[in-house]
Figure (spheres, rainbow, N blue to C red):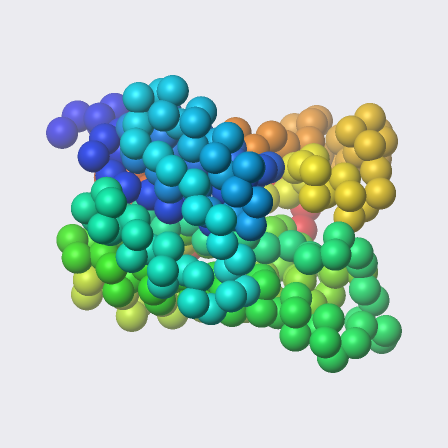
Length: 257
């Protein structure tokens, strides 16, 4: 296999959680453009159906599944359907995360309920997705956890989110060792400032304000796009990354952490 061919995903089956919008949608489309069949999972059926239609227009197999990753029965059921309908599972992208109410909570003020909610959404669901995907990967595979550069810097208003993301770096490293005998690699992608709907709602900021506020802090001079994260995901998913596991990569334009 030539080097350029090692970046193709033809014949692979991928699942992307939180794939209906934003970074997840970008990753789902990117994997499909590289040749993978992609199943899109998110809470809103209309969103996942729309992304699945885009993927099918690229000539790939795709369908959308409406599921809440915090409903612990939903991911096993979704992955079983993927294997039943598409015959295999090769790539699992645990992207769903953030905050359910798009609000910030300082650590001195956050309630136990919100603490648990953010920890579960940003760490437990990704562990669960990884565990369940690995159990259905019979011929090696790729697990990619989408976190945030908030993992390794102070993040006022996002303390639990930040801690959960740092926890995912540690968990990814351990999973990489534990799943290596099955030839499953496990890696993290940590996006920087990607101006998605969730980002705008949580920060209470417009695209223009985000550019004015953040572009001067980013050495490469711009905020990110979902396609930037999709490129990193496609690499980790590809044969070119066969010997890379337990790693995380910042996709942040050089933004200091």
